[in-house]
Image (tube, rainbow over all chains, first blue to last red; front, side):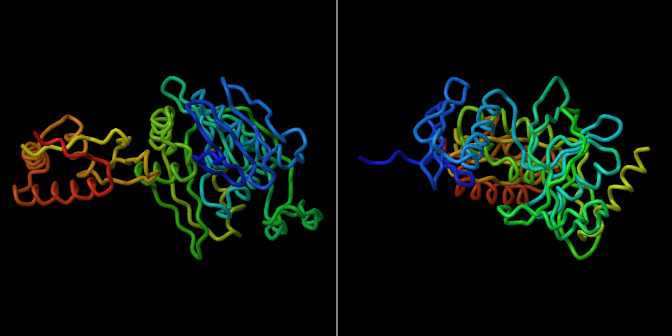
Length: 253
Length: 89
């Protein structure tokens, strides 16, 4: 008996896809979850799997299911400013998305998502929707936030990046008005990011766009619309992020 | 008449300063500058190579040789990436 061909992978999850039916298999445990008829359905080994495995499968399942409904996951943090406008903070892992998100939360912004955000197109607007993951800040940076000093020893054991879970006000949705592409650097610089470079960055942060299934073209169009909003490339040293949050908030006031 | 057609695996997003192309089969993406995006747009209209060169020449006010070179270079790259297919009659 031959195994079915793996169509794509995300983290520990292998996905085989037949049209809109998607079978998600956790590579380490073989536990399965299916997306069928727009619903998540438990399959072999799911109920017996650990909560962490079920959470990983459910996370990917939710991303697939939302995508089939025209809502697209982008690996980015997203915040709502005091005027109700959403800002998307994109960048590779470790670029400072969560740290800036927390710094903004301290300045009165609310959180849509720390490690992901859902976007969709409503009329002429791109709306960012909440993606509920715990907000976490690198333990190495916690000393910059005085209220976290006491918590910095609480970095989650299971978290390879040794981040500290924190609490912040949460938001449900907001029209996207700006995008910041974050990058660690030895010098500070902020430059305008053109739509083409912005779209390329968004494709990297929303890789399901390239699956080649029936949703890819609509997914690409949503990212194209998102790339048309004002976008900036922010190169920074990690220590600058909390100051950047204060400056941004001051400008908006 | 030399003519190319856009591959069924290609998806294009035109933006203000160029375009981004996806190849949905190879799962790769490509970036085009403004000139490349213009050539892609004309390709999508089904124009043959000679017409694409004339359109580029007129639009950017460049000489024929330069336009021909730009078109040939891009078509080669797009062909290598499987984003266009030969549709010559």
